[in-house]
Picture (cartoon, rainbow, N blue to C red):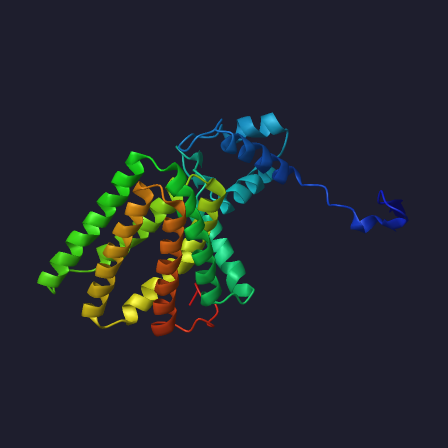
Length: 269
């Protein structure tokens, strides 16, 4: 049997779009309520009996809808007398894991991931310089000051861990993206963060020279401070140039000394 596809000619009926299952329709309805804020994190969904009556479906169909939403990390199911389906906030890490899998399956290299970061962050910095508020500058300065104090303490005491330095460096970059005020850009950066963070953790673990790490953080403090000065002056072009140079140098150091830039992304080793 054939039918028209709305264009010239006819196509086999099996090329039609598959009609969604009842479970998918239920999941879509509840997902939409979560996205619109009608259901908030921590809210408990009505009982299975109430939902079955509301949607006119059987228990297996409803539970299939629950499994779809559990896989999307939109609800959690608790068993037992006080059990039920509880709403979870959409989690960026779920998307990050999925994108990481796609990157790995497509043969994306670590170098390509870093190239993307070099493109995104200077653009965010340019935008931030034109719209920054005093609170943004204060938060960035506080982050830089914490890192500076850690560097000074680590130089004086070899027993002090540098793990906090990596967290502060990530926080500084995160603040730049967040305060730029473009949510699409922030989400793109966020889904790549797990890939970058996993690689950086591996690279740092392979580095046995503590003095090099301390010096690297010291240079970062100087570069971060210079960027904040550009942002304070609302010098968007200067901020963007400086941050592109910073990102280029950082990427070359990390990729040139700690990893093969042609190595394929691998988050599942």
